[in-house]
Image (cartoon, rainbow, N blue to C red):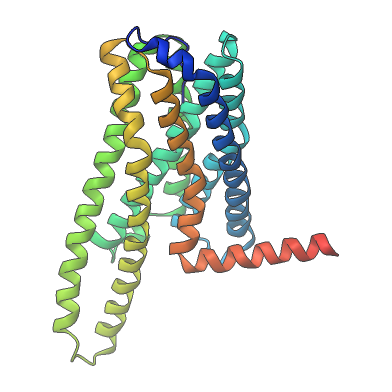
Length: 297
C-alpha cells in the first residue's frame, strides 16, 4: 500500500516525535512477515504443481493466490520497507505504491473469486463441473491480473481518484464475499435438514448424493475462516482509503499500520488454506519432506 509523506496538520508534532521508532518497529514487523509469506506461499505453489492428484479449478485459483502472495513477499514488502526508511525518493514511493496496490488487489480479488467458487459449488452442485471449468478459471485469472495491473497505473494519473476507486474495489470484494458466505450458510442449513430426513434411506444414489453434498459443504465452510481474516486485514485499509479520497488528509502512522495488516493477509493465506484443506496440507508436507531429503542428499 502507499506510504504518504505528508502529515495532517493536527497532531503533526506527535507524529514527528514518534516517526523514527515507529518506522523501526514497523519494518521489524514486516521483515518476518515477508519471510513467512515467501516460504509458505512458495511451498504451497510447489505442492500444487508437484501433486497432480489435487489439481482442480479450485486449486488453480489457490495457485494464483499463492503466486500473488509470494510476489507480495518478494517485491511489495521489500519496497515498502525501503520506502519507509528512504521516504524522500519520489520515484521509489510511486513505484512501491503501484506494485503494492496491484499485488494486494490481485490477492483480494482472488480470495473473493474463491468464495464465489464455493458458493457456485453448493448452489449448483450438479452443474458445477460444467459451469466452473479449467479454461474458464484460467481465462478469469488472466483477466483479473491484467485488469488490476492496468488499474494500478491510475495511481500515476490522479491519487485522490485512485484512493476512492480502491476503496470501492475493496468494498465491492468484501460485499461479494459477505453475500456468498451468507448464502453458503443458508444452503448448508437447508442441506442439513434434507440429510436428516434421508437418514433412513438406503438407495445408493441418495447416499452418494448426500456424500458429495457433505464434501462440498466442508470445502465451503473451510474457506469461511479465510473470509474472517480477509475482513479483518482489509477493512482498515478500506476506511483509510475512503477517508483519503474525501478529505485530502493523510495520516502516515495509521496508514502504514493498515498497510502492514494487509501484508499480513498474504502471510496468513497459505497457512489457513493448508490448515483447512487436508489434501493441500498432505501435499505441502510431502513436498517439504522431498525438498529436505533432496537438500540433505
